[in-house]
Image (cartoon, rainbow over all chains, first blue to last red; front, side, top):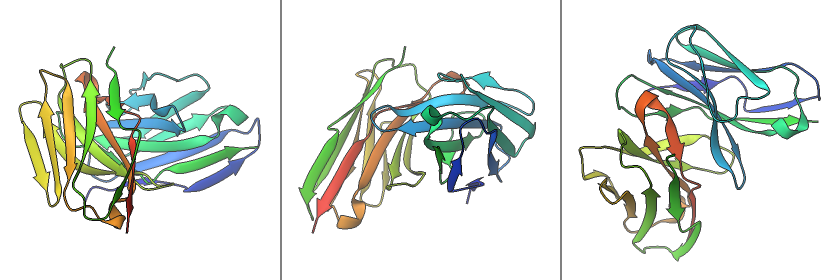
Length: 112
Length: 111
């Protein structure tokens, strides 16, 4: 089974902190994605990556950055957390081509 | 710009009913369409993937259809059970691998 693992299920951080959300996949997928999910807004794409050291902005990249130093790992960074970044964060991976996308279990981040 | 719409937003049915969830999309230039299930506070679980060249896919009590020309997909759940209660999301995949999601249908199956 494909496994996409997010490092934390729940996180509570203070305003202004630098926050790292980690995602690891074990199926050698080329593409990795970070989404956030909010009630009434659905899933929105923050950043994605097609390969190591490559990154592309999604629909809502402001306030976030990403890092992909190894193929299996894709990190989302909140440079200075703010309360409006309180959300559920979901990581996904897909192979090249048109195959299935797989998601991690989600990280519920609360910024206080 | 691709938009994905799911109707209804919420659905409550008695156990044992057959039901249909709807998904529509505005741009037929898709690679595939995928249905997911999400339990409260959890991640997304893939249910069915339909490639753009296919018309339907089946897995157990689930059947998903795709009509690209009309921009529609349906997820049919046979003999619903309380354990089917969850939010169901459809997503279309475009070039570059990005998934565009609908808002989801929250399903409640009453015993």
